[in-house]
Length: 391
Image (tube, rainbow, N blue to C red; front, side):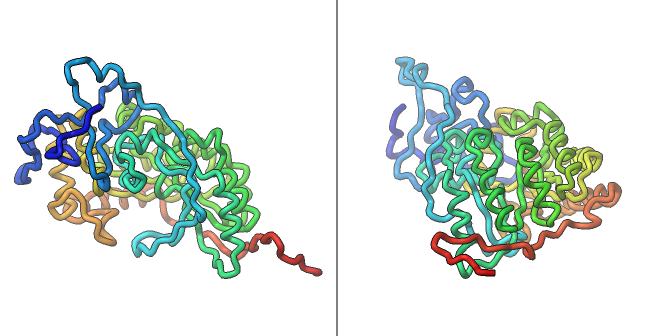
């Protein structure tokens, strides 16, 4: 491992044969020796191709062969789990285009390794790479259930649905041993507090006992993202997430248990998985799902280059076409974060995707009724030292 020249780019660009027509090239010829891709054997089972330094780092480090076979000595990326000692667990937001104002993330980083994950840039705040570090250097919040109970017990707390899984997946592989998410659900059930869950993992079925009890009181609903029914594409794009059949089976089990379920076709990637919209909705409807939604591919900050690298490594013949269509739906840019447009995009292609989705939902009877959660059952947890009622 060597320190890059002081003239080297902080985020070495992706070397690609060509950019979409009419787009300016951002591939400088001054640094052809900088290669950002990590050897395949070192990143086996991972989504990102590289591990470029975070955007807040003063220095960039890149691996290069100095002629002494030093790269052969580098170990493969292994998953490590550190402790997140945050003193609060509920995160607030004021985004006007999402249906919740608070969320919980039991983990930082996600081993699922979805290459398109819009949460990847958050790892830069930890001084780590949004690339391979994001999916191999994880942080767990073992005190999350206790912190949640404390926050719910605060005198000024007003209950509203808590969203879980909107940043990193609460049911990623390390949850099997850590059981932090299950602890959070136990707290929410005792408090009668509503929760909405988003995941790509069939591990959510482990908690059907709690979720079914909560659903009977209109306190829980679950959304599972199904990006593709193509096993090869799914494994390449989401290497450690549950397989498409496992996710569909999870939707069926949840639905059969009386838990309101939603299938999310997310993200929709033009010229890659957009042709599967109708098939995914049809399969989910047969699994008992009653609601559906979709999100267009989002490429904020480092995610753009990570997705480019993956696309060039796996579907180089589609590179120009995919990015041309993305820019057609993003006002000529790779990404537009404008409220109300970031999830669906704009332009003829975005409109076509939206209409196809709506027509398929109408045909399958999806979204006719939406499950509503209630706060009527909320009972503020007792704090240590609280005097018990005499009645």
